[in-house]
Length: 234
Image (tube, rainbow, N blue to C red; front, side):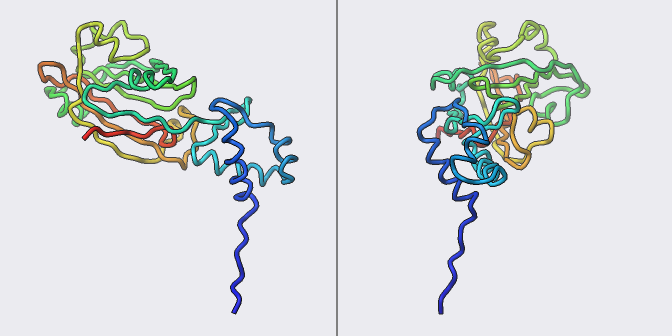
């Protein structure tokens, strides 16, 4: 009895060939145009796009509208420790980190925020939304929540490392717990982070306290799972 051997689809064979080609390219390089690649590998553009889709889903490539398809670096490792900070940790690894302030708002605290920040009923919170980019590629969005009483101290914050800003004002925070999860992005989140909606996000909820042990900041970060690996210090 002879069992027929299943032939691997051409787009998957091509995806494997492209993986090999990426070894000779540097992060930030762009692939040749679709027409050139299709001619090089003697395939139609539909097959080529399916092969590229495989590498996009793996986090090896990023499609940029109007620019082309860019090679991404290997996932970055973020050491999650009590005193680690996003910008400082990744900058120390040689990455160019940018933090843009996207939104600032005062509103009533949710029940969860009130519990973590030890607020009274009907107290307000200050919410800052920041977008973190690595080498000009958006990778994380962070919601920082503070009791409204901290609003004057944060009035001049316009972007950059928030921890550095607070340290300069003699408010040093340390992480007391982090809760890590994963989920699919919303339409707006996927658009913000330039990622497909079927790819997972990593979420990290963190509570940070000051030197006196008072809860100061409750943050929720969402990051592209293909760009990050969190390293826990045990």
